[in-house]
Image 1 (cartoon, one colour):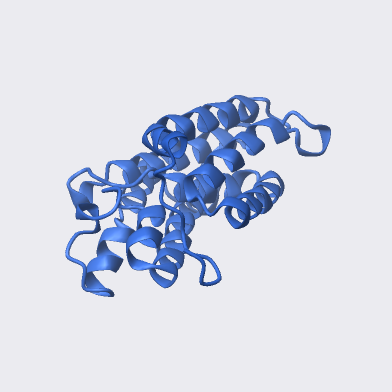
Image 2 (image 1 turned 90 degrees about the horizontal axis):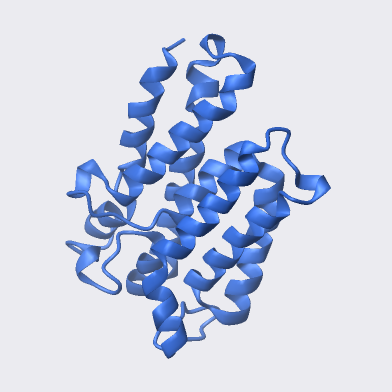
Length: 210
């Protein structure tokens, strides 16, 4: 078993993998996706610039980054972490993976907004609430075709779901984390909010609709 302190830099490095940038460059021949669309190296901009196939691939890998990072303490250092401390190590590793996604060391510290990586992180920690939030995300995406709006709505749903008895966590710290993450999602999407209000936000194509 590793020292739990070693899982922290591993989580950051894992989050720093610039999925959108590398997939765009190596699989789709686009030198730098950050020079197109919204300028972000994330799943939403990949959907916008390269389409559903590329966007789905990037989203899946970015979710996996968060899931694996938040699971590192349990997988690699469980025997050296007290049971009542495991959640804090998982949150720390997940947060560092999100930080790595937003500021990736492998891509000049210019990454994405971290939505998919946050999703993966919380899927490892609170899978039941995240499952409901995925349904909320899909419903909003199908209804309006704005990934940004669907992401923010799902983030708010996660925060408020944890106030309900079926999803209330044993450790109340998670409730606070949920609201912090919702606030972070709204903050990182402030430009999208402006475009939504002005009617200039790009929709993602679904079922052949633009």
